[in-house]
Image 1 (tube, rainbow, N blue to C red):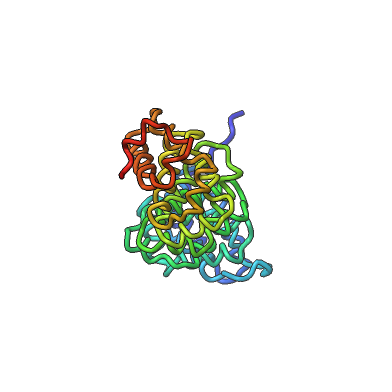
Image 2 (tube, rainbow, N blue to C red):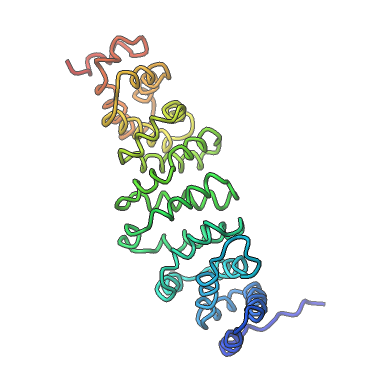
Length: 320
């Protein structure tokens, strides 16, 4: 026998269901029904999006930001359904426009919610902020960066960590966001992740984000103050991919231009950074990466030129 296929729901059905949600008990029953409807087919999801279900779900999240010890509100379910709806770009924009500062609500959930709520909050934030206009991104509050960094630190799930990295890569280049990320403690967490990471795409994302955060003085200072900062960044050159090498060389150049000291340059020699930069010039690493490597070598020629790591044929490139 063939399994029976349930017909799509109707807009009046959704509206009637939402009208009868005066008490928390009724809200719980409504959520279970909405979850069942959303799981049946894509048509149901689109009807739910156009019938007020999104606003109802968002109101559950916004008005029930209690502590993790609070036994009631069904925030996990509301966030789960919201994410499962896979809202269109217009739907995501309406979600932000019609529910006050919904980003603040999700930030609060990330602060006090369960692991599951934090995961869905990150996934929703990523979807919303990827289609936000630049002014919205510039205005993001420092507290959001603190909670995103905490998600990376806690490693609550691979999906959440990946989404958080992608989100931070998207928003950090805007305005003062790189400073907010640095002040939230992003750099030491990223370095620790880089120390543990062996996957190509993960390394590339972490280095891309480190490069962005090292675009501010606070980020560069944090990297230099970490005992493994210079070592792990330089280690990734020529070991992961052209993208990773390019990002790592950019980070080193940014630091060298802004806050180089004799001790730091000697540490770079001991770590084999100068030797790696020479290898970059000899291998197929991309034009921009080679140019930055050459610039780095020239920048510190007076300190490095007597090092046995530096090939003699490169001396003519050094400034007097």
